Length: 345
Image (tube, rainbow, N blue to C red):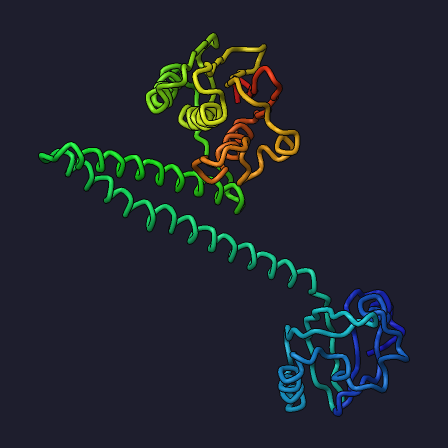
């Protein structure tokens, strides 16, 4: 190999000549560019001096093969940089007499990319397993319990037994809602995001009215008024918007003043759809407002609160998935949560 050749000087590959004992006899300038090593810091030293300890045994085996006259192709190991870090190199080496001619290429970036991809795949696998456990291993037994309770209600029962069965069904409903909240939280936090299936819909009004009626029946002491003036169609996932409204209404009923009305209103504002839920009651504390849409945050101070504190977080995620935003304003007069999102996708 002619060290004065242009290729020897300008190639980005690390070129070298090694004797039968593994000592560098000659190296090209790329060693400095890749490992920060000058010729005087490499030549007359064994290449084993630069190998990562974990790669020594593999490298020794490869060196034995080349000493037996067998070429080594695309062999990867780690070499120590002058700064103490390590670089992955991919080697090709061929024997010629009592010398070995070798070339190496820095593949550190591709190794890091491969490791990063493997890590992401592992995270995705964990996410799928976690969500599968919630979606199957928890939901299915709960569904079986709910079905059993319904069957028992269809049989002759005493008044006390029917009361207990009704409480059991309420517990199943509450647990089902908690599992759904945890599923949505897991999807949003583990990278998948909350699922929305948006389409041109003319069904939002009846869906909203049904959602309000469900909350109204569960909270007969709190009057809930509705006012809808938006025009159809609206590009949205109606079920998810209903979930958002249900979360906001549940929050308003829980923290509002008993007997004071809660108002749900929705209309158009230019190209935007705007929906609000307002309640009377104590204002949300300033320190809570700053964290209001964070998971496991509660918007009030009442001790007897059900749920995990995920309702507002999930509502905010639903708004974001629709390209919109959820905001809150709270003062002595009332607390208002407002959704603003584009009418069209």
